Image (cartoon, rainbow, N blue to C red; front, top):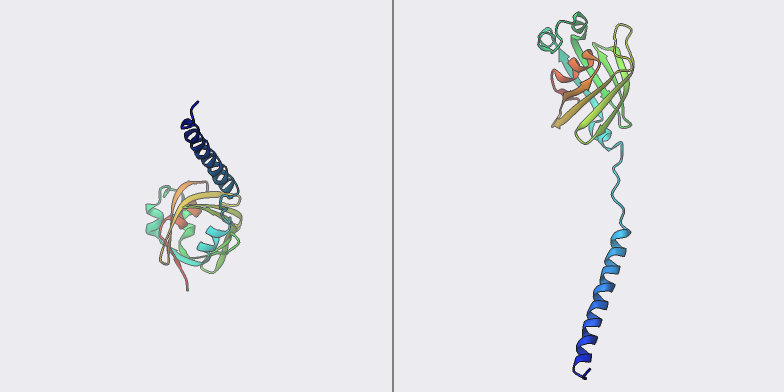
Length: 163
């Protein structure tokens, strides 16, 4: 080995050593980063508020299951209250209709009715919807559900947020 080859070898070895150290530093930095976590109440906080809508005989007749005579009982002025902690209550014409919980994830919402009025038949029902909020208008599109009354009220019109 002549003397001219040694400095090139040493330069190459130093270069490889620097690359190796850089890789170790970068991997150590990235390993310490945690993925951001989503606050499970963040969606509920976004939607929290009081909303109203009115269901008419025309809404009932246009609904997918319009032959159900019990759907006509949903005609009237509705008020929904969604709280920051994922709870809701619903009234029609000032009378208790239902209460329960809701969970929001991205553009999906799941509504669980824990209790409802005596003539209602939605207790323990779960409705799943895609939601959109545009200004004060909160609209829903059904993806799955087992309570036609809840579906009728939520999908017929956007709910209007009250000041």
